[in-house]
Length: 441
Image 1: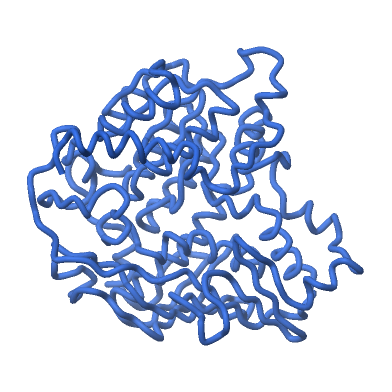
Image 2: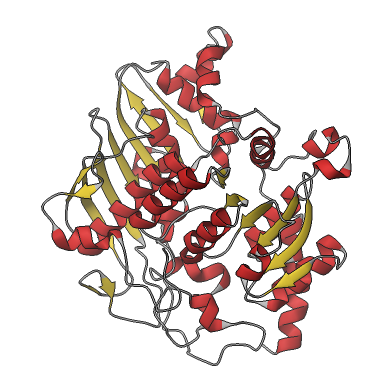
């Protein structure tokens, strides 16, 4: 595509993300902006990563604070967002460190590709900013351990963009499980969808408006392929973990939260089905011009309390697709973003869930939506609904599942020491080699 055509395309589609593509959970109800007594009570915000999710996050936080700076290694994205959403008033940068140098910025949103989340978040925390970061928060297990440590050290407020934790149906599903409405939970089926196949793709020179070296960051230096960047990055293991960390960050979270394991983790992960679009050797794909995340998978995850969770690309043989099915001693129920169904749900009208159970699931002030909860916690320094510590634990499960898939073998995990048992090669995948100049530390 020629550059003018690309710019025209971005102007008509990227900015749609600030409105039409705004996630369903950012419903416009009463906001903290309505509550503000003066403009000084609204935090100054910097938005890092200005693509699809970044535009949505910017539009959401604009209800609560004043966006004064944007940052993206693709100058087209910052320029379009600045013009259309902010009237051209924000300063924008290519280097996130220069944005963080602004002393007037209180809060940052991080909506970059996954492999940049941790490095930028660490820098923001150390610069004294409160952080809202998109999921999945980390590229590796070790990154999660480091982020937890630095959040504790800095005392900053941190919210992860796993918005299902703020959605009433998911809270209700977790409460049903916690109250024992289906007896002791035995099995959970999590369907998160499969990844697409694609390639081989053509290698070419990067466009002038994209700093390709910076976009790659800690990942290996490779030639530019349009399908590697922007919306398709998650199908490359170098930058993400496919559907396992994309949708897994949402649905595995709900499953682990509901069974009371959000502060712990699994004890074993067994690969039952494993399909990659390209060959793998020693954990890495052997082809560099095609999507390489697992396309179909079924991983059996066992927890210390005896509950077994199956993480699958789909559960059509169980009668449902994307979502979470809980099975207990006396019944079962299903939840996803569109519905909450099952006999225990039908019984709620006559036998509602205890408000005490709901209160135990809610962190911080119960605002109108996920971003509202974050800003409320920025103001009162409370714990956010989706905190870094629980997210690290559930995402560790997803990372372990990916390691098991890549190495194609069962893993034993100690959730107390956070180590893989008896498998040095697999344990080595808790971190990755990082390109010089882009290390995460």
